[in-house]
Amino acid sequence: MRYVVLIAVAIAALIGNLFSHGELEKATIKVGGVSLIVEVAATQRTREKGLMRRKELPEGTGMLFIYPKERIGKLWMRNTIIPLSAAFIKDDGSIANIVKMEKTGSEKVYQSKGRVKYALEVPLGYFEKNGITAGDHCEIPDLPVK
Image (cartoon, rainbow, N blue to C red; front, side, top):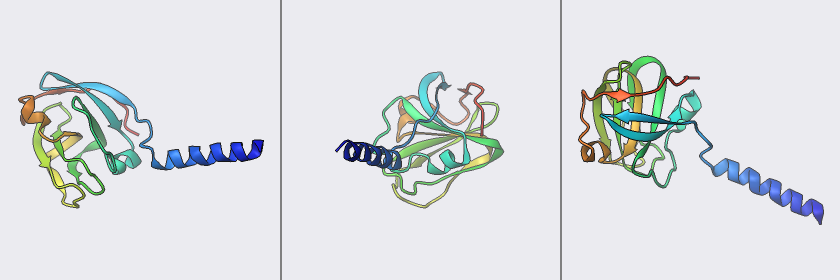
């Protein structure tokens, strides 16, 4: 009986790991002077997974994608069920452009205007609600990219 309980616990843990989003490092950044708590996607794997299959993204939170070097940033909504807004951010912290990614599950590619170091996904309409536009500055702590 004891082994049955141990096996059941092991199976439950395995299933939980398969469907969890995992614990990503969190950081506080400032976007246009507004504080935001972000999950940090700093590895190829976490950048590829992004916010896929998430059911919600609370106001005041987001996901910060860090690229190993400046590049044309590209995002899509594949397997993403919540509508998002995204800012593409240059290495100096300035916002290159903002896009609305309303069509969930789409494979349409949204890209930066020029080379960027970061992309920031937030709930749809967040930037407008907070008066944040292209050209505004972001304060991003020195976070390692892996």
